[in-house]
Image (cartoon, rainbow, N blue to C red; front, top):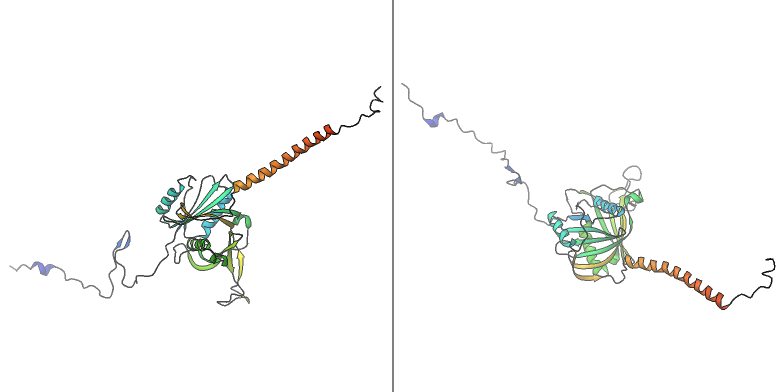
Amino acid sequence: MGKKRKHSELEAPAVKKDETAPERPKRTLLGWKEKPENEQESTGFRNREKVLVTCSRRINYRYRHLMLNLVSVLPHCKKDNKVESKATKGATLNELVELKSCSSCLFFECRKHKDLYLWMSKCPNGPSVKFLVNAVHTMEELKLTGNHLKGSRPLLTFSSNFDKDPHWKLLKEMITQIFGTPKEHRKSKPYHDHVFVFSIVDDHIWFRNYQISCPHTGADKIDRGGLEKMTLVEVGPRFCLNPIKIFGGSFGGPTLYENPFYVSPNQIRSLEKRQKAGKYAKKVKAKTRRKMHEMTNPLETDEFADMWKE
């Protein structure tokens, strides 16, 4: 009778692993469990700016189209539902910004279906600025010939007036952070084919959007760096910002700056009504003066008035 084999002899010989092929890291729901060795960890600063864009209820259709135009040219923004324009809107907007993982907010507030106010805020600690928006022209109204790539990063240009006063420097820094698309954003494209122009005229900030146009084919093709043949074609939208107040907090707080030349639209409308009411008052006064003149200077009786009444 033969001898029984040992249990160790029955097992199959172990297969040697290929040392040249690295093992694939385990995959989890949150990504790779272990980073590959070839991947180098970036230690530099990465801009994670995200902007929440929303508006108040009962907004006018033109102002809503302006908001949508800004959403289309800002790939790093997020839209949200309309917010009720009340005294507690600041706390509501700060909570929405935190839920959306954003760091800034553009809030379009419409009052009386006529006046548009723009809140530009850095959340949750501020500062924040309140603007009155004038001279609104949307892309649909203008029908301009400019057309740039959607999602491309813009170049921001400012006039030299922004470096004169401290409040203009603060506004320049806020506009740069909010309107500047972060590098390597997942919804942006690594091209610069349009320009955002911010210029100060009569203490108002005027916004323009231009496409950088240059010929790529034919005899007019330019080399890299040939800025002489590049042209700017306006795309839109257009609007004008009149700063009202700068607050130290987000949607409120201590007042850092107040525009002394600001006149509210309600005061302008009341002055126009007074002028119209003044015209009616002048007519009434003219009638009373005429009656008093007729009473003080009566006409003489005509001796031939009753001649043909027989």
